[in-house]
Picture (cartoon, rainbow, N blue to C red):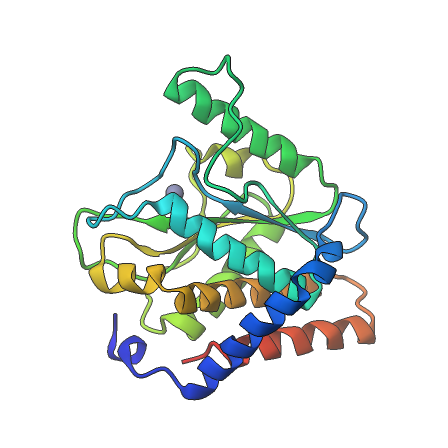
Length: 261
Ligand SMILES: [Zn+2]
């Protein structure tokens, strides 16, 4: 969008992302063991790709559905979690949802899906949630990320931290501020863990839509979100061991090195 964002991407970043992509491919199978169950000691990152199934979410002028971009970014975030040893689960990992046959109407299906996600998320005693969405607006000019957070101090801290990392790494000109999620977002009202909803960009902004559709930019967003999660876990740990601190610092240093403008 801005001159900063349009500038040529530094070759070092491409190199790192290439290395990450390669490493992800070779580590995906053994790393799958890190994909967590509720029994994990370390907090589990729950990745929620917004919408899906018969609910495509917002639709870009070129017909691109929000649900597909949400899933693409989420899958990249999961790949990075596997690579960096972060326990994670997803609320969906395909575009199809297993609606019960008795749920026939569109509204009924959406309600079932929202309840299903809340139930899945609240089954974890020790988790953090990132719900991934895209914005849309009648005007083509608005752009940039927007972070909404659930109620409670921990969610607010996670939201502010994530917003600042996204702003400084991906869109320094972004003047938005993180905000409490409105009551209308059922998922954010009902989950019990620290939770944020990240609107990664505007489908209605042609330059941003092009970025959001690119695998490279999707990986950059995912890397920033994982780095934010590492930092939040570090800050949330009241008695961190020196070893634990070092581990997280190393992870987000490496993640952000390849992403910064
Ligand atoms: Zn959405």
